[in-house]
Length: 90
Image (cartoon, rainbow, N blue to C red; front, top):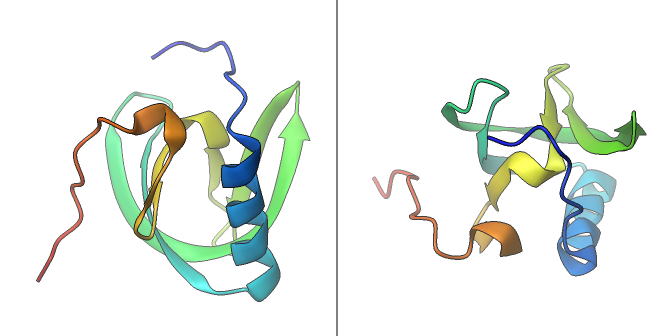
């Protein structure tokens, strides 16, 4: 996975910001820094920029690069429109 940051779609950023403002629990699919697919959930504490890269920090303290985010709840990230949904439908 490229280490160069690719800015995310502004409308998608607005959705992340709304979820953070509402302090609601979200389901996430994303790649970690080792390019491993991660599935999880949490409450977005804040969105921030470090070294010109945008991140979200969950209440748990975990930080996720926004350009590595594949899915938030039912909403696919625009950069991953063709990526399959790995969430469990059980």
